[in-house]
Each structure stands twice: as structure tokens, then as C-alpha cells.
Length: 305
Ligand code: GAR
Picture 1 (cartoon, rainbow, N blue to C red):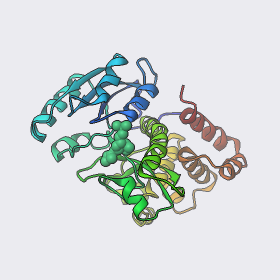
Picture 2 (picture 1 turned 120 degrees about the vertical axis):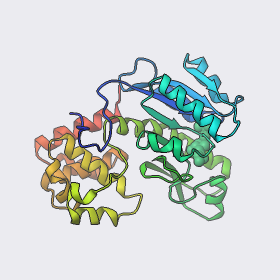
Picture 3 (picture 1 turned 30 degrees about the vertical axis):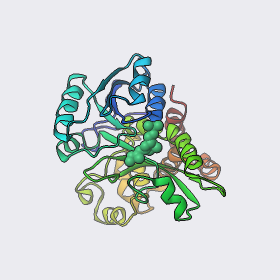
Picture 4 (picture 1 turned 135 degrees about the vertical axis):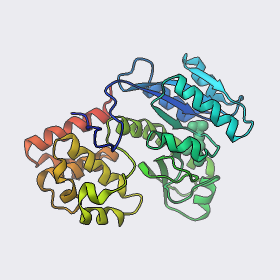
């Protein structure tokens, strides 16, 4: 697909070159492993060039080193010291994107603000439900029938920040926190690399300020009324219309009046998050110009190499 122009300031991506990524991890690092596999050295999307941990014992550090990726322990001596050293290393390595993967510390505004839009976290629940710790126990205790995982832009809260992508798994009879954890981890190992690909293509960004000016007041009101879980779909549809040279239709598309391009953008935005045979069938009925663009971006995200 064509790139999404970044002059509008919606997102610095696509970069026009492979991205340099850093991962921050505190523990065993299975999500790190999935990211290392998805973005190895020389990968055209980008590569993980640095792994940082606040915990010198973290197995995540071993995982990085065994793949030849630089891994640095910055033992926790307080937030200020950790963040100063981490920020210096990120700058030194020319990092474009920071991924928290089981990083169990809260970052201060001084770290988060300059990286906003380029700093992601993964959390094992369907946020905004169940932020914090002991998620699977709490999900089971509440009798939920479904859970999942969320990749989100990091802001100053704990597990808050605009949602980028979510995936769902069922809670089944007989589940324990352990069985639920492994089901969610299996999902996460696919979800996180996919969320990164969407970001790198310019198809994910935090909601910009001044939406009324960008999309029209009515479309902005429609967007503001959406739940945090619904918003990423609209942002993806907007980015797709931009990439397809149809940005003028974005406001109308938000109101369901974007014609075949709007329809194609919303179908594609949905399919990028989750496959669905009925939506594929609907896409197939759209004019060829829309369909070929939609199919190209779906292929790019689903068969990344
Ligand atoms: C993952 O499930 C991740 O979502 C969660 O920690 C686990 C790390 O596992 N993160 C949080 O709870 C952040 N609030 P891993 O070390 O095997 O990747």
C-alpha cells in the first residue's frame, strides 16, 4: 500500500525505512521472544536493537543475548535514575519505538511525554477492564465469560492510554488462573507483533487533538461518543482513507456517508483486527479500486514477510 503521509502530524509512521525498536521487560519475556522472532535483524519492517530490564535476573535479558541483541540491565535504584539511563540509551541507539513487554514499573510523565505515540504496552485483559495486577484471578472471580489482551499507547496512568488493538479469548469451564494465562499469552504473542505492524504502517495512532478541525464537528462528536474500545477502528479507517488518497471522505465515513471508499475502509479496518468471513464477502462486492487496495493492506499485515 501507499504510505500514510505524516505531514498531517497524525503519526511519525511510516518511517520510510526499517524501524529501530527497544523492548523493556521485567521478567520471563515470552512477549519479548515473540517480538524478537517477528522483527529479527535485517527485517524490512524493523528490528529489535535493544532490550532493557529493571531486573538483572530477568530471563528476558538471556533471550535477547542468545539472539545477539544488546541487552542491558539497569537495576532499579529509583525511577529517576532508571529513566535517565534508559532515555540516554534509547537516544544513543537511535530507537524509534519503545515496547513494554511485561515491564512492571510505572513510567513518569518525563519519560512518557516525549515518547507519546511511540511507546506501547501490552496488558492481559480487555482494557479498560481489569487494569493492574492479578488479572486472571480477578477475571475468574468475577465470572467473566470472555477475556483477552490489549496493546495500547502508554500515557501517564497505569494500563491506561488509547487502545491500539485488542484480541479476545473465551473463559472456559474449569479454567484456572494458569490455564487462562497460557491462553492469553498465546494470543498476546500474535497480537503484539500485529499491533506493531499496524503502527509501523501508519494505521494506528492516538486520537489527535482538534478532531473537529480535522474531520468536521459532527464527525468529531461521533468519535468522542465512542467507547475506548471502539475508537481504534475509526482511527484505522481514517488512516486507510488517507493512505488511499481519500482523506476528504474521512469525516463523512465516520457518519456512515463515505460511500464505497468509506465502506471499504471500515471493512478493512475491522478485518485488520480480526478476520471475519461475512466482512470478507462484503469487501468482495466493492468496486475493484477499493477492493485491490483493501486486499493489499490486509495481505501486508497478515503475511508480513
Ligand atoms: C504479559 O501477559 C503481559 O500482558 C503482562 O505481563 C505478562 C508478561 O509476560 N503485562 C502486564 O500485566 C502489564 N500491566 P512475559 O514476560 O512472558 O512476556
